[in-house]
Image 1 (cartoon, each protein chain N blue to C red):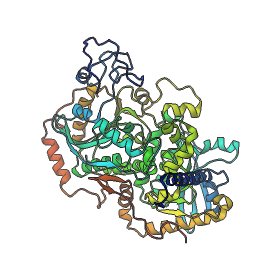
Image 2 (cartoon, each protein chain N blue to C red):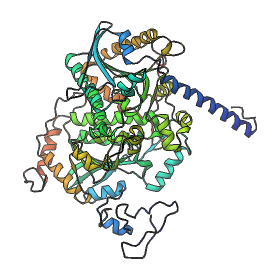
Image 3 (cartoon, chains in turn brown, cyan):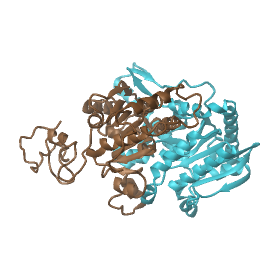
Image 4 (spheres, each protein chain N blue to C red):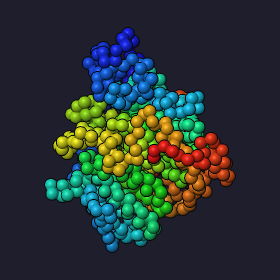
Length: 320
Length: 305
């Protein structure tokens, strides 16, 4: 973590870091520098300019899930090294380093939670774990979470932050795109809502698989949401890229996402979406006999949802 | 390994072995990209009679990097969707080097839906360096187009067979690769990123592409061993570019065999089985135990033998 800075003036310059890069607590937008507790108090959003700092997977869950409601599942999964991959350093070494740095088993954590009292299955990615890349573990964690949501008939909420598929697992990582899409297909077939939140950045194989397939897709301000990165596009096309290339606001403009939501308003928005979903009829379409939930579960889910305090009988006064 | 050799020699031997593997894998990459190899329309010419090519996404665009149509294949009417590369400068530009835009994947989705309605098995031919990375492609929703194309394939009620015939590059390839059976030609490659892209990112030097290719092993054999493809289809000796007709016949045999075996499965479980197939993919550690390593089925490596 950042070293302690014993000054209370926010605009004080940040201490230089060893590798010459900016200190992680220095805002790249306006240059303001914050103590850890100041950032935490502001949900890691710069109070001066509104820049959204990267958020660790667990901090995201703390911000979104009702206190104490998150029950992590499948936290014991770890990446193997099926290819014996070695670039400048072995894959296994990069993995242990990421585990130590982030305290996570891999780039995604998942579990059951409630958001504003509404039950859901919540997945959260961490860009600090090898660029949030999706290998076999991320694919499996997402798929299990999605299957649990389908089975229990409760909505799935995923928060993506990822550079894409993990190169060190090559074609197996590529296949996680297909695997997670299959999971979403089962979810859709079960008539269970899926809300996909895109944080900065969500690119490559993650935006081109499960993250793009939410029934509701919302993004944080200024998040980069392109399939190919700006540098690749620049090098391939030799075009000058528009300044807002691939950014959330531009994606909204082009009809690729439903909304851009600031972090302090994200929980409200998710609560609103989940309440609206609970007000639907929840009749699953064309269920496969193999995958259908046991008879009666939908009725039970309906009863449960209708009995919650934020049930569909409440009118929704907030902006859409 | 000879353990009696003094350490420096063991290191030397390992380095030599690595270098040999490196050049083997690089040869495979170059062979997969050889412009003498049959492309989708070459296979169409040799494999189907009564071909009707279909064009356009019905929303204003016909992407020439994706070709599609219906034809008669050994007694069945099938729908074919594939990437198409060009051989000369003009055709390469016309086909955009086989790099599809979102409209190309929309075209593919339209053909998948058509095949599903009319009961034509779907055969896809994968041969692309990747989806086209351009400003307009991104603004038209390249990522969502790929995801939706995969989803449409998962939902099919008809049998589907995907064939990696050359370069299986990244999400742009997999977008038409989520099928009941995945076949891969002996000298094709399948990878999450091009060796050049991998070298640029991990080594920060595009000239390390041979090393990158060796590290991530995009060959048919490795893809088979990792459980990603069901069958490796043999090519004529020296490679498919030596004899298009024979290459097409060998691929045709494998496709027919795959379609027969899919049709033998109960139709009401097709979607469930397809999901289960991809559900199994991946290798990881769970409580310290390796999960997901595949036991190769004897005899499945090469079809048609």
